[in-house]
Image 1: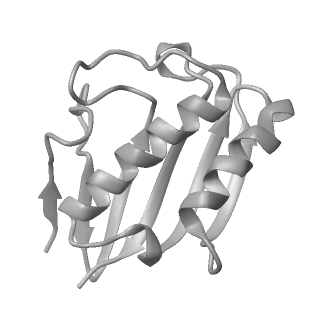
Image 2: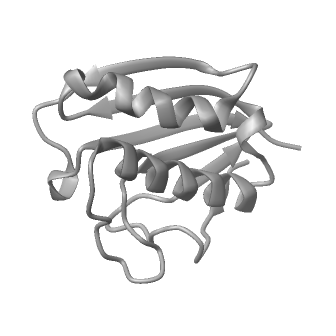
Amino acid sequence: MKQIVSTENAPKAQGAYSQAVVSNGYAFLSGQIPLDPATGQLVEGDTAVQTERVLENLKAVLEASGSSMERVVKTTVYLKDMGQFARMNEVYSRYFGEKPPARATVEVARLPKDVLVEIDCIAEVG
């Protein structure tokens, strides 16, 4: 049985998807981009600034799902420019500490709203 998760503390879903779905002890989070949940506006700034907002959005959805950053088992990072990997990774590392999840990072041609980074994840719940 799946549970749909939605929180006002992260940007609202803009289409036919959910912020997260909880099923069989895991939360599957849709990709987050650097939108301010209070205004719905894109956060201006470089890859580091945008990565921070993305991770804060993921954190809010994880909490609404009954999980946390510490329980994330897998992430996928989508970067507009792989040359910005170090900037993203510096911020990312602050959020995942000593036991980081498995991760794939890919460069993509284009992201929604022409942002610099998007991240999705899977986490344990319960």
